[in-house]
Amino acid sequence: MKIKEEKNKAFDLRREGKSYRQIAELLDISKSTLSGWFRDVDWSQDIKKQLIEKSKGASRKRLLQLNDLKKKRWSECYVRAEKEAITEFENLKKDKLFIAGMALYWGEGDKIWKNGIIRISNTDEKMLRVFNEFLQKICKVEREKIRAGILLYPDLDSEERLKFWSESIRISKERFFKSTVIQGRHKTKKTGSGVCIVSVGDKYLKKKLLTWLDLFIGEF
Picture 1 (cartoon, one colour):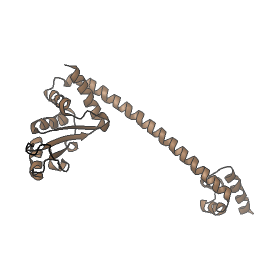
Picture 2 (spheres, helix red, strand yellow):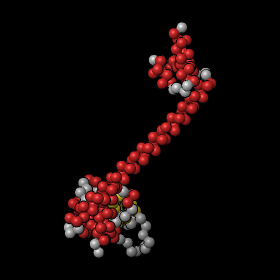
Picture 3 (cartoon, helix red, strand yellow):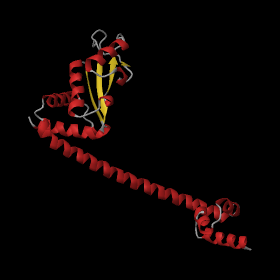
């Protein structure tokens, strides 16, 4: 008799739109037992579909809420980066390395903030060595986070150029991306050592760097 009463209660709860989990908790019955009771009940299957759709809707809503919260937190984070940059600029603007780094980034740097990549490329190893120093000493980037890459013409030896650039700009060979071979527009005029790229991924720092750059340009 008890089983029949529990089954009737379970059916009543199911008709109210309760899930297996909710019914199991209310009646202290296993979900496997409920599954057996409702397996061939058509209206129960309809309720299951309704619950699935409801769950999907709730999940989408939660995801949107989480995305909105995430955007708000990041927005606040980048506002803080701008404020830090403005505060620090007054002390940095007379520093020779800072001035050099800003001038280099003004002329050669990636200025798209959304990609979060601080990147500069050139054929001049001295320029890139200075920028590497700028990243470490001014931007406080850990050495291991700074990466490099080389664009080579087909007639250049990859290992030889890797050694050259690594020693010249003071970035270990292990932190270089795989070299990329390119075809130049001119068949005879080619850059002897290729083009080297120095980069670091840090969206927060890039917001600061671009804020510094705006302030730096405003000084002229």
